[in-house]
Length: 380
Image (tube, rainbow, N blue to C red; front, side):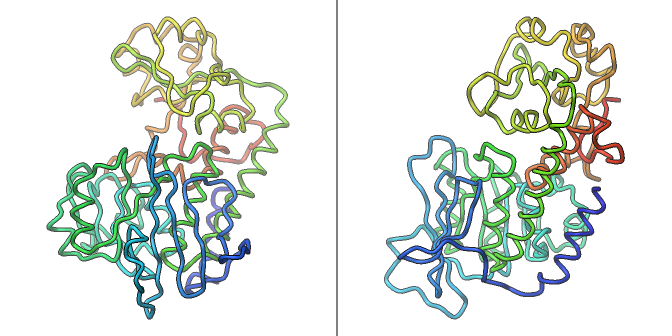
């Protein structure tokens, strides 16, 4: 099924990716046309014909401000609007710098990965397609994300830098903006549902005037996801699921309203903390977790551990869990790129349909008998 999904997308790209399209399903209002966004809450796009307005409404946790950007076509010059926007961007983008591995799949799906000219900590990129660009010298190393080499970036002179922030005090991005290079804060990581995160491909679609391509790709991902979710409902049993592991003295695991918990709900399993509130992580003691999950059927993502031996050496008490005894632990850390980057952290957000199918295969193996998990592998 994985190969079929890839084949479908490749066929789709060969048909329409050569065109920089502007037509896309829209909702008309008296001020312009709004890009249709079904799940994502963090951005909006209005199309006024000769320009578009992109607004990032939730760039980081507890953000009290939004950011508006004026997107102009190459032949269009801005008027006296400089005080109304946080940046002016000429589209389609020809050269771009992105700062998170989660941005890489969107560029590749849209067929514009060749526009990437710089990235901080390139070793974290796992995609073979973009790794080839790095090895050929087409993508420049920009240092660490917390301290991007501004001098190197300015020499690249990209049309746009796509960044992310945990607050509004990034001095590097401020210096880049002062040099005349626009910076957009991408808030995809703030979304709380799998399909909402995946829908941020439409954000990149707008930047490259490929709204129709982005919409078609997302629609297929949505169809795949919802079909898998429907299949999971046929399961006759809900296995109990534990997640996470200890970090120092604290066991971190997904909260009940997190993206990870929604995946488990849609996979039709009984996540043992699904009734907790919040979209982040729970921080619990070992004793609390053990009392609840000693007999859990399946254990997912035990931190960064890749083997049973490593897990036991870290804490012998882990061996007391039923999932350990039955060798029923699965991890994303055994699926890595050539330079050690975990593929899930790069592509999981872009392909929630693959993530959900992985979980269904693990928890209800009879439902997808011919499916081979992409991200999740057994602990070694």
